[in-house]
Length: 92
Picture 1 (cartoon, rainbow, N blue to C red):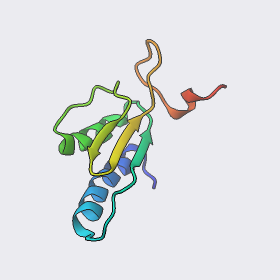
Picture 2: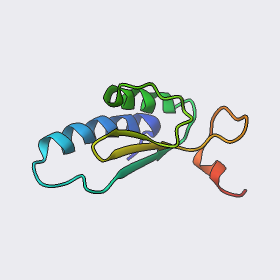
Picture 3: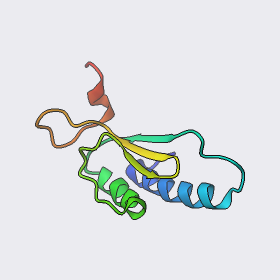
């Protein structure tokens, strides 16, 4: 997958459209967890998820159940920070 938040946004809608509606076999037994940076680009991901959840995200949720077995998990915002990225979770 490439394209940053745009690619993740597309993945959410395509996964739910293609996998959960078109496949008839038993599936969705294990969670699909999409981890993403909680920064300015995450707005597109949150907007796409809201189409399925019918709820507006605040950015402070530890995870959001989008639908079926699909979850999105933004990187946690620490302290007074306004955004975060995966690199913030590791020692420098």
